[in-house]
Image (cartoon, rainbow, N blue to C red; front, side, top):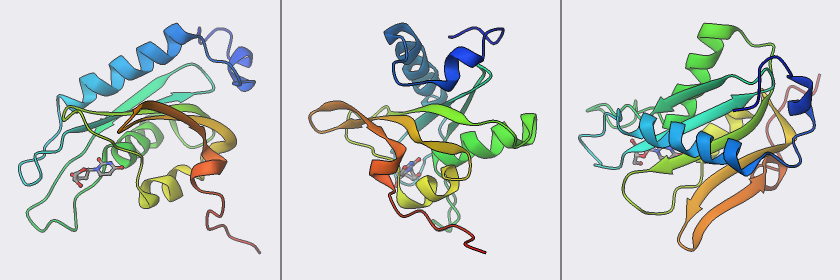
Length: 148
Ligand code: THU
């Protein structure tokens, strides 16, 4: 993981080291092992890399009501803010699952992430044709904002 003692190197995130990306994937996959998904059986993990070099992870947590289920990405985000506050930016997000299938972040997760990303935050996720990287602005070009 990039050194927290050199956070400025993370601000220009155009090219994260492949080792950093691999570590973020590993962190997301470890988080997926903790998923509570008795209803769907779909076990998702997410890892967020912040501009101070720290990483927060989360998994999906389902509920028998179904609709109260929270996705891995939002679990990671809420955990990060609760532990560190809301003054940092996310430079990269990795999403994985243990089911070997596609898993782009859902719209609700993208909207929540939108408060803490830059347009160029890199989002890594599995597709039917392998891992994909997209800048945030391509996944949610019209995030809802407070326009006042
Ligand atoms: N899920 C996530 O954790 N992240 C997403 O971006 C989409 C879906 C979870 C929610 C639910 O527990 C399971 O995947 C099946 O929809």
